[in-house]
Length: 621
Ligand code: CA
Image 1 (tube, rainbow, N blue to C red):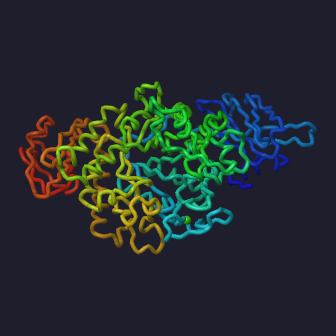
Image 2: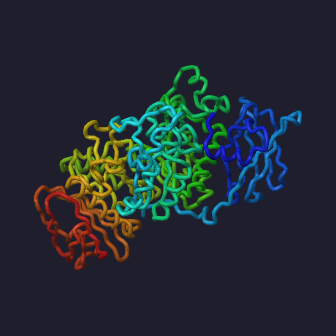
Image 3: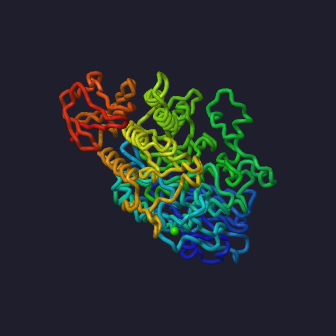
């Protein structure tokens, strides 16, 4: 049996006798002052269902006690609406007083501004980090005895490399100076898996950071220090599946905790068909729908059955527990279309009820804007599905940008793809709250996608950071990290950030050993991000763009007192751009400044553009 520090703490303060009776209580604590005043405790211990829990504290109402087929679990639902901060006692009683015992459970004070916390929005540029590969801040946690994957090997793309929570904490100033305003780290909860445990999406304990990433204390400290620097902190969560090494798998709470539980336990693995359109398809067969939602993501990730109400509540409370514990500004939810979709609505709805200004971004990897739009709150869906998800991911626009830059200019190819991609915004309930990105931890690096063309990479980044979107950039994009040797290889995509390990010859934090191109990209992105940080035109301005013409596409972001102009030019020779076409924007005679070079000029009839590249101008000096 494994214990984490919290559970040990409960033991120390809580158990008055017969400590062996209970191995876990989850959530390990709760708060008073929540909107939802009901609390479900999962109590795990040998034959615990033989006991009857009793609470004498008049301020705690014991609503229900539920038992499952597994005698080692009890689910206790409480009403804590009248409760006070502090601990209360739960007595576990059984025939024959000799066996009775008690535990104490803690209710903490919810911070005053917890409910009104703000999420992330279009004013944010999020730095996405794969923590095992960013920086090794603590070598003493590289190898932890007792966990299944015991080695670290930086030469192996799928082994652990030693990066950790402390490594991120150590480099918050770098992230902040670059101009990012938020951090999203891929999951750091325990992944006690035999191999590939570095990626974090096979969680084996939903209440405990992986000790190779650090302690709960270090995790809380990272979130706190991020916030102190003005960086919002976003947690990556997974409610669709767990890792096969999860402690539940040795002693499942009920017969239907996992989808295809019986089949899988009999060695008959049933994997999802990944046909995500079955969530919307008017003609989808039940067979296909069931397999999509209930099949296992992969053989090492059992699919959770969120239709089980005890589990559904467990998962919702787990998300809220982390929001309160880490003081989160947002959640990124993995594989959003895979769980039961009604549950996803309940899950997001429960969170938004506790935190009305919070943000949640869900991953629907689709190039079809109809699907991206379907999941966003406020979208009118034909099947009546009303989503509570504030943000979705713009995979369609990401693809349009890459194709548009890679292709030669033709009537229906090149920049027109980007222009028409953005034209799809009419289909979204709120395009400003959709997340755009050049790449992420699951796809080829943008530099590789753009065939290692530095100019195209600058064009992609400069353009997408000016869009009416939440922006996300993957760590290392600023120094042209690539996976060109094996395009699309996940281990390679998530390469080590140079300078994150003691003795690294190249150090991207200080610039030591970077190539000219890398330095230039880092400096370029820093300028764009720092401009974006304070640009109301980009955060909330009107958007106007002009159809690409002669290899040039121009986009404006406009607000009172600030106009941002983004010009994408694909011509291989210097050209003169006729500015009279953009008369409706009203820039004639105004002083504009190039945000990269710092040079200013008066907007007149013509603008000389040097061969291929991006020009970003502002009227705000
Ligand atoms: Ca480490």
